[in-house]
Length: 91
Image (cartoon, rainbow, N blue to C red):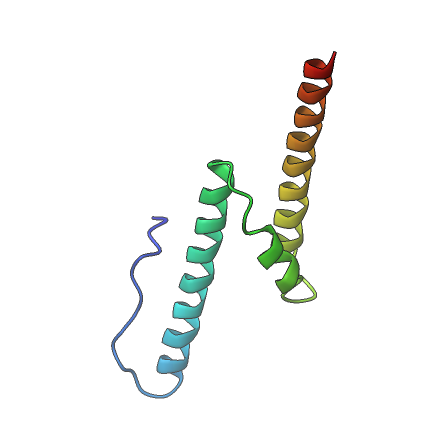
């Protein structure tokens, strides 16, 4: 469960191979989501520009825009904390 490290690599015939390719595409996407989530949890928001460039992947994509909103909110909090710290230093 939640192991997205294994892709299907056997060659299948017809629609079964299409299903394999689509499954591998989902695995690639899940791996990407996992990496972005890991980066955020470590305080690394460097994926924000890439996500903004990608934007919404489909009409029903809520995940990418929500990642963007979340990262922007975190960045805003960091900026506010830095501003408050600077104001405290300046007296």
